[in-house]
Length: 313
Image (tube, rainbow, N blue to C red; front, side):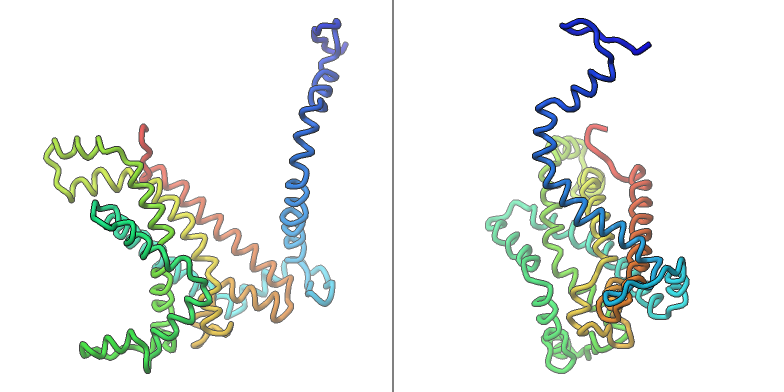
């Protein structure tokens, strides 16, 4: 016997009541307003995502439909020398850039958080590099780091130090890229400044009453309460580091020179997909990158319980 529910007109089946509630006028209106976004999500995200999974198991290129080859693309990747070089370069960049960006970002934000006249101007100056397009940024630093007439080596010569070849050296090419990337951390600094503004002054007053000095207040009050912001920038910085593309591609014209020392993972993925038209191979690379980023993000989230401190908890 169907389950009954009471209403103003008597008793109706519960399933029918739920159906009428789902298709009432307000729900239909809501779905109609959300329909453009849902359709766009399906067309531009869900469908390409599903297609890339299928293409990663095929020899698909932009010019030919290709054939289903199973796991051959993934097997070939593990025997691809350039693939492993690109992973090494990307991991090298992420391991050094992400911690340095947090250290320099927090330190710079602490300096810009001081009560000094004209601080708004200083904050603007440090934020301006983030507004420069990456292509223009790459051209600028190529001039600065030029081994023959660059400003950096010129200043080093003035103090008796012979500067390296920078972008022309296998040893210094990746440190040069890290230096360029650190120049544009103004956006992270703004987020840290917002985090500083969220720390109540009562904590500092209580620490001062207890006799804490500046060093103790920094390490026992400021940094612990700033860890949610550090956590956010750590996740976003890690994802961004593994997707490094524009700077090295612009500086090397897509060649990754010298000796592939600036061939990053996304650069090699792009070359396979749009230069060599190996779209199935590139799709397999994209899904490997997705798994790597998801795994690292999961590790960061799991370990965050030990070092991220939220106010009121």
